[in-house]
Image (cartoon, rainbow, N blue to C red; front, side, top):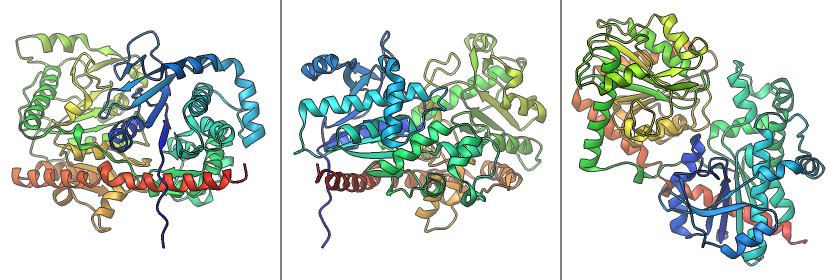
Length: 556
């Protein structure tokens, strides 16, 4: 007879991206928060770094009346906290901690970490110190809260995300042993480094030694905290089967549970609102393109895009640009296509000449210089997208069926050109392409299909494998499933570029009825990835961690 699962009374969840929107983990936490907040109101407590002490954080509203007595106690213990609400669906409680004071004790903290958990911080550099001091501070927050409010009659979880929070998880396990710890790696340091340095990852995964590769790639300290936290935490998790295999080989640890990344459909507008916002997004994208090109692309234009972090190879930006260059010269393309490259680069602000044209009442009749980029770059000669477009001979001339527009900024609603948020512009797309080489999960394709935009992804993305699994283990195709999952390996770059070219040309030739069917199929697939379905994997991880903590504490 199976046991009833252990469920927590309280959950603390720590991440560098709490109220700090820098990557996919922000989406994981912010879209899942409401599901947990509904299940256990104000007993899911997020801990993040306080970067905004001197100015307003648009994602956070402080509530000085919340836990005022504890905040005073925490202050006496050397913790500077701001407590309030995360401005996302569910509005969960957030504790933002100032970690800078702990730099003064850095060497003592690292020494204890070595003595107790054999974490090598000797080779630390760059962001390691900053992340570690935040992680330590987050662990101290849990210790203080527990001593003030809780006791061993409560089941408590501390979930730490990525290597940046590993130190805190180990601190909690040492100093608050009643709290069960979960460590979630969303991508291994070594795997990302191997892929990003142009080495073949997948064919040789079985032969790589994580510790050896960490030394070769100069990431020993990040690898060490990640590896040791994976081994010591009560429950070790990752986000896909792709990364689970990577963890087994590079961290020498099989994850206890795979926690796939879900999405909350509350983010997606419905009905007439959806139609109106899609129309507005398409209008704005075409306005910007026409102002830059000095042309008049109309609403029949197929709008294609890729987006994400500027990881040239890992995110597949290289093969996407190559595919566009091949599409540019393919006579089979009969419909106008506008292809966007939305990846934040080292930009120096919006182009003034483009702003002036957008403000003008008269349509532009000639192209701007460099008519493929919306913002100025600090070092355009060193930018990989710009270099590739020049090599390809992209001029966006009138006669070209395919036009390319590079958007090298965060779409936060105040970029100076589009002045719309990423999700709002996503609505206006017809097709997205995310041909990742290294992608533990892949939020961008999931977000795309959630907004009814069919997408192309690969078998090296966790989302791509999941999509095939949802299709009975068979490959997914755009016109049937709303997703095309291209087989990708270490050595089939040219084949992938050709497939993307063919998918763009093929999608451009679909009838409106076929496009609508693909859009409905995309939305149907996204519905299967809602948090209400995926949260059960978290409950399994909570059960494992709580049972292990209970066993650990029997002898205390």
